[in-house]
Image 1 (cartoon, rainbow, N blue to C red):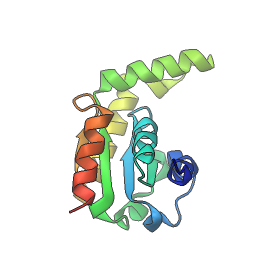
Image 2 (cartoon, helix red, strand yellow):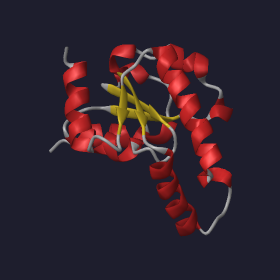
Image 3 (spheres, one colour):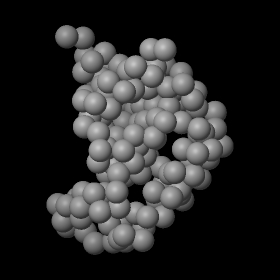
Image 4 (spheres, rainbow, N blue to C red):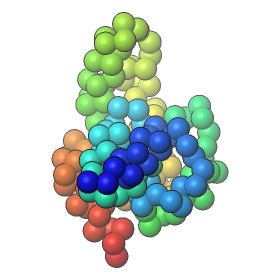
Length: 145
């Protein structure tokens, strides 16, 4: 197995690199703890170069998002409850407490994310309703058109 695509996914994980996005086969957008990283690495295993970018309202990257190639950009979502469960677990593991896992914060982030998805007119994948394997097939079919 060639690990160059896994390396690409690692280098472009969580918005670490926002340049040269045209090199990516797939660009995933979504709030924290929605499942961007597991999906990215799973897709990387299947020879896709995936970049994932967290959607944080305070970062205000809306103009940059508008320049993303729509044909390979996908929005990820989950329910407030699902994201909250993952964030509470993360807070517990890190020994911190903040509004990061509050329902209000998550709801605001999801509303922001969906506004971005609507503006960009990109497909939305609900990872509460679709396993990463199914999401990979869905995305692969969309980008190979």
